[in-house]
Amino acid sequence: MTTSYPRICLLATVIMLAGCAQDPEIPALKNQVGQLSQKLQTLTNQALAAEQQNTLNRRSLNGVYLLPAANTPAVLNSSVGKIGVSLTDISSEANGSQALLHIRSLMDKPLPAMSANVEWGQLDPTTGQPLTADVLSQPVAIRASLLPKTEHTIELRLSGLTPEQLGFIRFHQVVNAADAERDAVSESLLPAQ
Image (cartoon, rainbow, N blue to C red; front, top):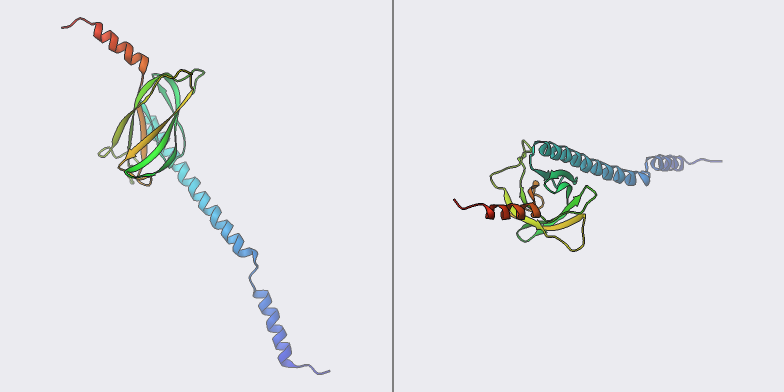
């Protein structure tokens, strides 16, 4: 029996190349690792923003800060009781951003009619503090409803900042409408000076 050396070399080369061939599962695993890394980065950024939001809220006396990057609700002890405040559906619009502000009673009673102020702006990239120079604001109100509700949603139009630029939203100066009306009546009954 004669053995041809070129055939043996060819067979050895084919075996070596087969051993070097890439397993088809490796690209899929690399893709999964990349996706998991991206999700981990997103969760890390969200956790840092939630920590920053909590720090801002500890220092706030009459309102709460909501950081869109935190995607976390905040609790406010206000004149209408203990309420939870959160943001959803932040998106672009012609002159800036829009979002839904959810206000929910955290007690066993419905939300009364109320008014409040909403401010929004950017965060200082170095300190993480709100940049107060260019803060924009708008009043919001929840009117009394025939059926008691424990949650209200307000559509916000946040002009001047795109969702990427929007660093914070502050919900503050909550006034119970019944208290405001009672105070207005009391002031009108005072004798003129």
